[in-house]
Image (cartoon, rainbow, N blue to C red):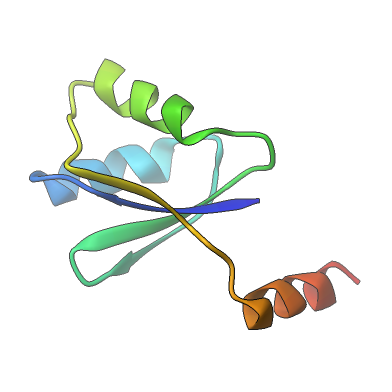
Length: 79
């Protein structure tokens, strides 16, 4: 799965759309951004297209690299 950071001027609307997005496994707020864990194979351009098609333009979109610790924890959860 991929973890992305995403932000927009209209954060409440962004949160609503992300919560409704079927390809998002997890959505949490961190400061002025949302962290979204995407299902495997989903690209950030697909997320951007989904938000744009719902009338929301974003001002921040970035893939967050997994730390070694997080990678280990993900592996342990899968067992």
